[in-house]
Amino acid sequence: MTQDGVAQTGAPANSAEQPYPVRSVAVKVAQWIERLGSIWVEGQVTQISARPGTRTAFLVLRDASVDMSLSLTCDPELLRRLPVPLTEGSRVVVYGKLQFFTGRGTLSLRVTEIRAVGIGELLVRIERLKALLTAEGLFDARLKRPLPFLPATIGLITGRASAAECDVVSVAQNRWPAVRFVIRNTAVQGPTAVPQMLEALAELDRDAEVEVIVLARGGGSVEDLLPFSDEALCRAVAAARTPIVSAIGHEPDNPLLDLVADLRAATPTDAAKRIVPDAAAELAGVRDMRARSAAALRAWVQRESHTLTQLRSRPVMADPLRELNHRHDELERLRTAARRTVEQLLRTESTTAGHLREKLTAVGPAATLARGYAVVQRVAGPERHVVRSIDDSPAGSQLRIRVADGAVTAAALGATRLTPESTDEKRK
Image (cartoon, rainbow, N blue to C red; front, side, top):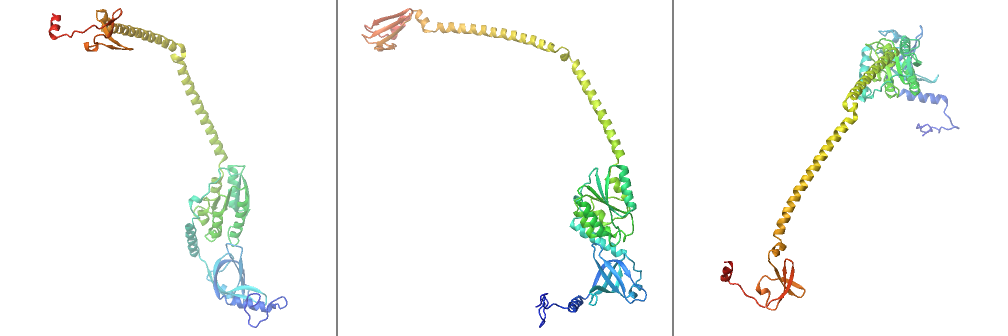
């Protein structure tokens, strides 16, 4: 096993003391590339060199999305047999085999077949890419960022000295003279358009002063507008932090950039109108709002003044003490009536209480005693018991007899029990 990882049976190890000669390295690279076989490659032709009398034509095939290219060689007869002459900027698909020229140490693709990519095929590829980006959600309306109401600085990516640049700048400055532009002129068609626009977009997106970015160009064919349907550009627009406006071509033109941008303008002029407000219209709106506000304020003051006048004309405001005096008189009348009612109630209750007192006195013990009755009590030590029967006062018992005006102490000498006959006789 050699130092470069290639197994060499019986070959000396590669080192600073035992380096490979150039011819060995060139042969090994050629042998390795030879094993790749034939391949199909797609790109955009940027250079064609086919001199009369030569046996080899040289071409440069460039990737439309990145700054990478590949050298091609072919038989000049192959170019002459093409149904449509090959020109710089044409998109093609070629079939060939990589070759490494050991003498010069260069690599090229030896082409044996060239196919021009037609409009139909381009449209199919665009539709295929559109379906892919739709599935990934790059066209989702929820991802659209709102544009600032009045951007102070606008980034503009467009062709140098183009009509689109003139339209956007002139219309925007006519509408709002204070607006400022940061312009990046790039190719807007051809093999270098996408790399240059990607670089300009990244630069403007990093600029903190740029509040919105416009990609603008005039109308053109499908091939001319093809860079604005490039996958790399669409993904860069979707990933940008700054709101982006697409102003490509005319109303019927609809590249994929229109779908992924935050706002699609029909034309560059329409983009300027939708990004920058019209100063005259805004001033007119301010004047109108000011007039409406003043009218509303005056109407409100008039309503409040009328309300105050009505309140001031009410009796309670004309003579504030009248209601108090009226209430005071009414309160005095109520107080007098309440006092009279209470006094009448007291007299009635006093009379009732006197009658009850007389009745109570009439049936009380003192009245009974005054009529000649007495209460006889037997005295037994400190206790006194009312005598209700002759059995309660045997002979010799000490008695206390209470009469109306005092009490008499006596002793029981004996007792006589009354019989029913004697009771009847007594009644008679």
